[in-house]
Amino acid sequence: MIQMISAFAAPLVTAQMQDCEALNQELRELFMARAAEGDKYRNKTPFVDRNDALYESNFRLFDWPHDCIRKLRDFCWAALYSTVGELNGYDQAFLARLQVAYEAWFHLTRRGGFFAAHNHPLHSWSGVYCVCHHGDDPESDSGKLTFINPFSTNTMYIDMGSAKLKPPFGGGHRKIRLQPGQLVMFPSWMLHEVLPYDGDDVRITVAFNARFRLAGAERPDEPLG
Image: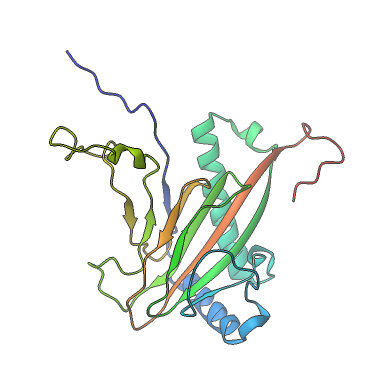
């Protein structure tokens, strides 16, 4: 008798906002207006390869005073805290002691826009929320959020004994076409990229990074953010 176990695994967590159409429309209008203002709200110190077809905002998005931003932030934090609690075995009392430091921003992508492979240092969790993704072939790879398999060394030798391994044991990457209202969360160390968007509308997403500190356990002089 044989038994198979997954010895190593990386979590990808998804959550879907219900009745998100009105909120997403508000977010789309806000982000389109901010992007039209050029450099005022743009991230002026980018370090990941992209092109001019992709607009990236500054990283203070979740501090903006708009009601639609607050609603999105609350949805993201509820999903994130639930994820952290489930994966770590924390109860609600312990979760209440976790203080989060964060950064958040939006991407507005037009035809040809892409975002090269990267991860997010100095954070434990990251997330991407889809505001809209329209105007392209849904069966194509256009604009797909792609997670790069961290076990890339499993391609050092491939024969028919390993060529067709089923997930999660295979060597392929994970490509996700985000749907409006969908949130994907993942450990910040995971390399990921956004493939070129080949549509005649826009693809808009909101991303965040988060790290945690346990209230009462830190040094008095240790800052959270």
